[in-house]
Length: 515
Image (cartoon, rainbow, N blue to C red; front, side):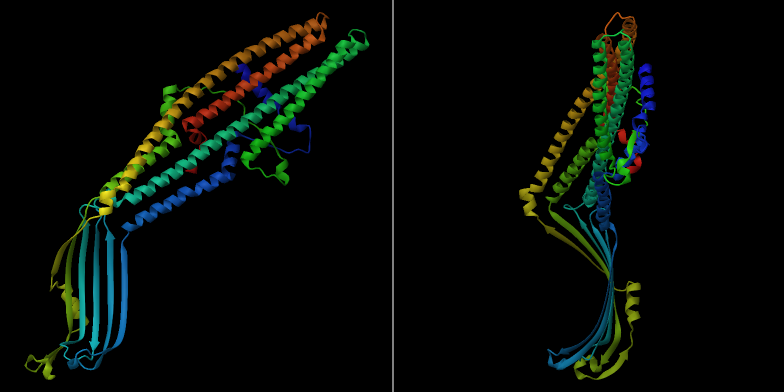
């Protein structure tokens, strides 16, 4: 394993030569974290989804708004000419007056509502036979309305708030799921590009070696030490590796383009020609957790599990709410009021207003009517019960039935998701073990091929074997090196997939701030 890492480090540190052949090509070294951050910053899917938690937060605020107190103010001023309906009061008379009203309403957690309102008015009229004119009237009234069955209790009162909070949680989990998937895609594209560059480097080294071998064969041919067949074999070997280098360069371009697409690189302008050079080394850190630990982690961290559990909680809330809604509507209303009245009171002769003779007046003001309230002079109370039967809900129970079905469906979805995660855990652990074995076997095979090629080269130099035999060993060594790098990169991608399956790659990348 250590030898593998040394070879990979060597190839990566020399990989910059891929782009150094053209001095006009600009390169940008990027770590995996750099790529992840750029992909998340510029990804339009994530930008769109990032608004959902904020929108849901505003829905929570809106739902909580019913618990905010409500203040009402009204003012009215009037001047009316009224036709008399009774001859004694006059054929027509005028009414001038003003009214002021103020109310405070508050929804309470038990599902009820309390209110406190104040009213004050003055009336001045030319109507006959009035005992108070101008007339000042005020009252202070307290009212509490409390449902006893339907709409009773904190759970029902906060139902909309909890639903909105659950939707906010779902929006955040959906965003996390998208971010987690994007992180894995960037991981995969990044290491695929590393593999393509490593493979290109291996093929370029093999091409250089074949060219050196061709030069030696050409000199030996001129000296009569090598045959024309040996010369053709050397030339064919160079052509073969030139073709392999071309294919590898195309693969590098393809993987680089795939990574640029994830990073939203511009397709036009100066930056579009910048070449990405991955600066990360594929160092291997084996997964140390067991399958049981991995399963527990996935079940508690996967956004899908969090989402379905939140939906189960919401459907449970719906069941409780709609069970309450089929109950009878029985409300108790309690009123407590204190009126006040004042004005200029007229005393008629023999207490008979029909005489039209005023013998005395008692002065009163608007303030006097308010003093009556302050002194609680005229207490009044009332209690009322209102009963209504929601027959549609009682008999159909459609909403309740739908909520129960939705709850059962959500539980089935949770079981399905858990089963899927269990299979994913088993598959990824098999994949990790397989790639670990590939790394060990490909490393051992590459070491043996290096020794074998060294021995065959000595035989070739002594004329004991032909060039075709030597070239076949060179190709096998290059293939062994490429397979070793492939095993190493596949293990890195498997580790990235493990992080996604466990639902922890967002935290591993220190991206908690996104949420």
